[in-house]
Image (cartoon, rainbow over all chains, first blue to last red; front, side, top):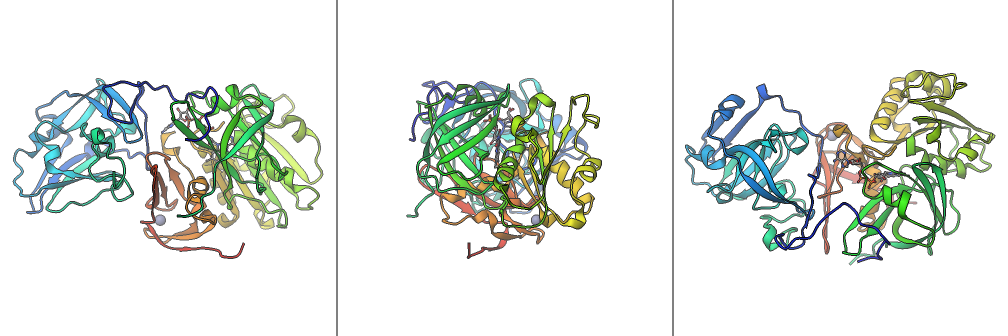
Length: 199
Length: 240
Length: 89
Ligand SMILES: Cc1cc2nc3c(=O)[nH]c(=O)nc-3n(C[C@H](O)[C@H](O)[C@H](O)COP(=O)(O)OP(=O)(O)OC[C@H]3O[C@@H](n4cnc5c(N)ncnc54)[C@H](O)[C@@H]3O)c2cc1C
Ligand SMILES: [Zn+2]
């Protein structure tokens, strides 16, 4: 640690024992960006799941809205050390989307408008652990936060919750995504503080 | 293991208020190796719980031993600039790394005319170039875009007539009565009236908030300036 | 103004000075996406967190990423064909 800057506080942040190691609590919703924010018109929005066996499942915005909805309230943990408690979302569980998908694949790669990708084991998307969400805090999801729709996988660091998600590719082999090939941990469990490769 | 450019401890020796929301911080930096006009430093602030934040700031003064001056504009809900403009006092210490950046620099021996275009705090590295010009016979023209006369940095110094440096003020919101130009964002007519024509092949330096730099660079290439001669420094979404 | 949420490659100079002994921002790179040539200083830089992402001003493809952990740094030149580095200075 360098010299302490007298009376420097930085962004407001709290400490709380319910936080994963190394995290602090914020009350705003920081936006981090790795590129220009894509604007995706709803009439051209589509979500797809494809499998190594060659199956493709697609939903238009209307079809997607007609699926059973859930309203998860979850804590978010960003690898840049901020956490936010009790965020309220509306969207569709991956369990619903995966219902008719037949595949032996064990891995998933989420991909987004703008070229972003992130990988995770397929089982981390199932059993009530992940959603494709399109509302935050009772309002439609803003583009800066990933709207029209983003992946939400709150038990992993937030970079796994791909913004502007376009689809999920199921794979037989793990395929590291954007940050996973750039130095970040392949799995990203906040409770085990898996921030960087080798953690 | 590689030798890294180290963080140096800098001590505030003097503070000058430039406008109600901006000030120049003068630092004494032991071991400072000297710098070229246009270079910047990274400033690191560390809170007592170990939390730290880093931002870049252009060096405002010409090369002057171990003296380094930064001019910081306060950004409303920013994390670092309110601290630097309101909390830091003479005698306080911060860490800085630099000088860095070898691209956006003016080398005093280069001969073509120089066109400087600054928006808001984008004036800072351009001022370092003006201050480094010394007795060089390279002619300079500065187009300085600012919201209103109250936002002017380096007022006394810029208003003194400097031989070989022509300054045009482009007020975006409110202009003084004698300005002779209706307030508004930079436009092609400004570059024609106060800049150098493309045929003189000037070295162009454009600096300021990202939106300002985009606009000015587009106008310059639209007028026929060679993109290879236009160097830019974008401060990000804000920056005055 | 969120689409103007980037800085220039100049902003890479400090972070990359931790791993290079010369100023890489003056090196000329060629974009693997569109073939555009230019100094790293001319890239569009997003970040700095979770990492610096430098994109081509021509085609917006990612040219390099730089992630700084507490013990290691990762530099990924994924979108650059070659870097031409001036040796004399
Ligand atoms: C090479 C270089 C040189 C610079 N030189 C100078 C200089 O000489 N003088 C100077 O005053 N500044 C300079 N800057 C700008 C400076 O580095 C800081 O960006 C500036 O001081 C603001 O920092 P901050 O911590 O106060 O604000 P931050 O906390 O970084 O926030 C800045 C503003 O942007 C908003 N913001 C933050 N993130 C986002 C986002 N993702 N989307 C939209 N808005 C967002 C915030 O709400 C706030 O209003 C320079 C920048 C660079 C890259
Ligand atoms: Zn390109």
